[in-house]
Length: 285
Image 1 (tube, rainbow, N blue to C red):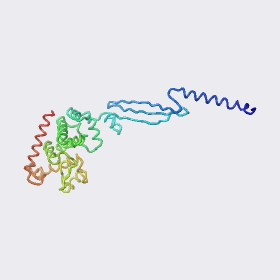
Image 2 (image 1 turned 120 degrees about the vertical axis):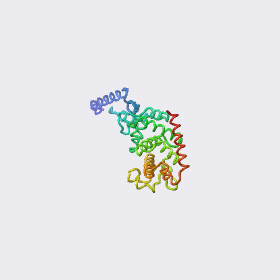
Image 3 (image 1 turned 60 degrees about the horizontal axis):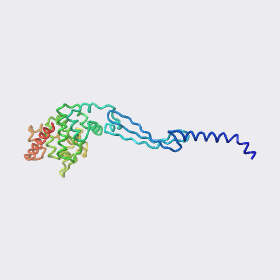
Image 4 (image 1 turned 180 degrees about the horizontal axis):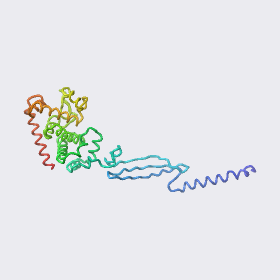
């Protein structure tokens, strides 16, 4: 008993101090021995809002331990930023004509989708869309909506990639855009995965086994599967047809060669498709 009484001066002050610390922690409004406190941090930008919710747990020493963090990115512009894109809209988006924006809106899309797709596919002609003339941009929009009208199985992204490539490469190789669109509809109904037993591949049904040397040398398609890329397939077909036009001196003979025989019925179908596109464009404008 005497020994315990002597030790009172050592243990009683320590016990009192521990009791005071525990009381302070329990009474704190934002800390506890095992409490989880969610906190929401919102950051907004011109493209939308990124909402981050973080739950914390207080440790005995008063520090906080992160339990869980949830982030919700609310729109495509934020997705582009999350992937390392620019904080400001690109010149491509800023240069888009109202016809492009209107056609995107009808598909439930925004101008930022053009940037997103161009970033996903570095070779894509979509990166040039904002720099095109108003007339060319309007043509791209009309062709994209026409493709979707003809074949709903073609995704909006593929439709816009094909449409932009048709306008871009038709100008590059000096061929009418409407002709290329009509030809692609006959060949594949704009399906970039189209393939037949004779070896014709892609949206323009190019014969890889015949043209692979030239396409590889031009950097268009270095391997067979490249022909199923929507834009590579378009460029391959437009280049080949332009070479036939230069070689034979007339569009009819060039189309005969592209078809692989006398192409009277083939050409009639192309003309019908061109008229369909013209009517579609007139209704859209």
